[in-house]
Length: 156
Image 1 (spheres, helix red, strand yellow):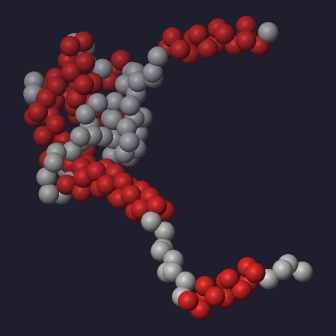
Image 2 (tube, one colour):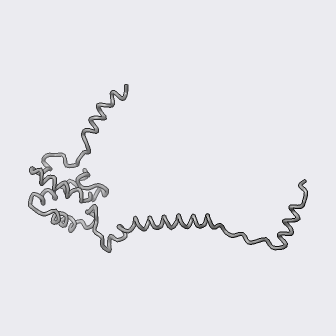
Image 3 (spheres, one colour):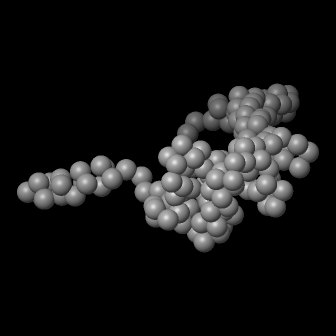
């Protein structure tokens, strides 16, 4: 019975799709092609407050301001590269969701490979230690004699 009651709500939730931060008509450009271009550019730029969302997905005030700047520049006729360069000049590599590879970002780009290599090295070392335990030195003549004597004794 509960399923029947929840089904319409679930259908409405799935049909609505992902919520976009730019929802107010006053924030959108009147030309649909320019609006789509502005959204595409916005998906390449990081929200400086949320840090893991694009400015198109974020509802932070700074993201809203950056969306407004992008739309103003699109309406002014700037190219995509000019708009991204404009924001990059003001906020640095951090504003880009895909930062360029250079000396400052080399560790950022190489970190996954370093972590993978370190993990593989740790696995190989652990397997090597497990497969090659410490070798036990052979028994001396005295130890062998003592062992033989202990084995010959009857149990109490």
